[in-house]
Image 1 (tube, one colour):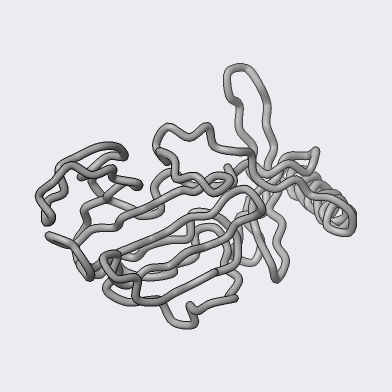
Image 2: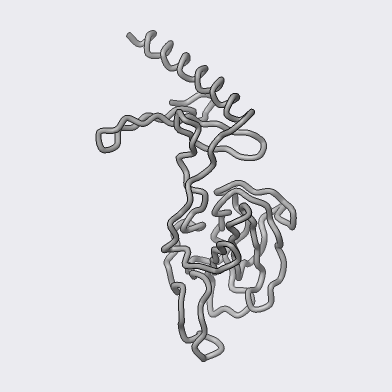
Length: 205
């Protein structure tokens, strides 16, 4: 259901379950939430880039440039030069700089447990720098081939409690749960949406 060109309410039936989602946003974040205030989105995206091909998985491999076996601590996604790269989750940028073999890279701290790294970028998106807060899905940079790279791609890493893990096998954590003031504001917005929806349905009938 739309209001001011925004989808503020979504209803769906999944496996005989009726689900309603309400859009809620602040200056810090935005998303779709269930009635209980729990986000419908996962805390992290497995693939922070659209239309890409997984070109090199996590694990041991023969390095394409160095020529010897070396653990690949991330997942590579091949994509055309300049393809937008998104923040896989809401967080704060720890660094956005040249990272040697990683070329232009960005590291985002999402919380005390999760961090992500994006490497070989052609350039950073406007305003992206250390200490900048970003939202899930926000464009942070563009695919490139900087550093030790054989072609345009994104090298994507997920770090859990300081350890680099396979992002494609990660049991992704649930997203945000609204609490405190946000939960109260959400309840007010949800009730307003329900009233508007009921009035709209009544007019149609």
